[in-house]
Image 1 (cartoon, rainbow, N blue to C red):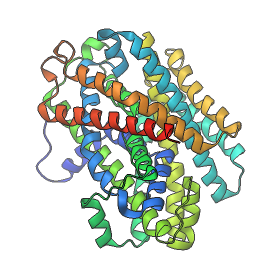
Image 2 (cartoon, rainbow, N blue to C red):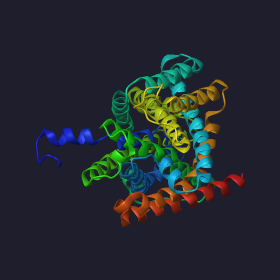
Image 3 (tube, helix red, strand yellow):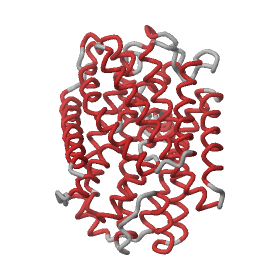
Length: 426
């Protein structure tokens, strides 16, 4: 089946194709990511805009590779690795993934609670358990079709940041220059910011989520067994490519506009020391007006509602596939108790960290360190699986996916080395 040559059918089919790739890309712009991009814009102005261009093809290549693994094998990423490679690394990887995701969930809930306090006056201690409990309930008790639609439509909230960028009245000539001409300095703060951007944009939890959601989509189409899901048609791979490219492009455009917004307002006004997305939203109000402030603040809450189920779900998929448990959001709670228990526990642990008032910036740092440690070896495994003919058959990666995938692996390895070097240096 091909796209209709003209008329509304083409648009309708495009919207129907969008699913796992769109949600995965959008969830990358979670409140902790917004904090990272806001700090970059406030601290260095337009100087890091080029990173959105650099990371776009790299992230697309990695996520498309993960999508292909899920489509072709009919299994999630951890399930594939478990059956074809030593499990020792997978045990460590899942432990690091769960820990990093819990820290990230806590940071996201904290960011959402801060902004909710800003908008409503309610204390964060009230907001965290209410939102955390609601997310768990919706994820567990709604049908997969409803849940997938909920995530898909929540991606609309990301356009708030694009609108906020225009309201910030940037210097478009300087923006263009910074976008196409990298401005790199090798002081510790700038290097740490670059490493943070890479770690936030190319995160291990997205690898697991992408592959598992492709499997969920196939289950939703009636392919209940692995045998029924194995193999992928050219049309399915083409649709996955369009889905992933759309989702990651939207994600990177939004991250570009967050840097642009904070650079055009906070950095320009000399407010360069911020540590949270709430501080960024508060500072925007006198500089860019109420509209930009509200868009930025509401975007933080909306992206948290999108990202937290993805963070908890990716951890649950990884652990369940590691131990061979039944896993999937299309199952009823009594059919996949351990899968849903891990999901709820991940959100619950994040809520506990917030109740204990552990510093959100510290949680983000811990999450970045764990993701940084996990990303390079996991990327190596992703590339090995994607090029293993015993697993992928004739659907192994093509040359461009391999070039970009291995280049991403090299960059992430270098980023971890730099992070460790700068951390040990104080």
